[in-house]
Image: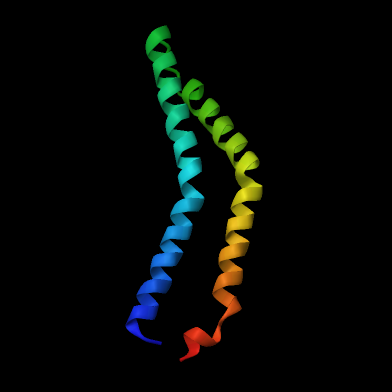
Length: 89
């Protein structure tokens, strides 16, 4: 396996991980901003009030995006193992 092949393989793996994680990170970021704004507006500084809605938003996003995430993971795995002889050289 040549160094270029290894670099390409690592690059594709990191991009796949990024695209799988990015939507959930965006959901968590938006939920955090909204909850922080509500806490500022109401002067309510309770840890449970900030944690539980973020977890619920994250879980809802995960359940909504899970089929897409599984499809992307399966496509990447099929691509990776589909031509295994390419990596054996």
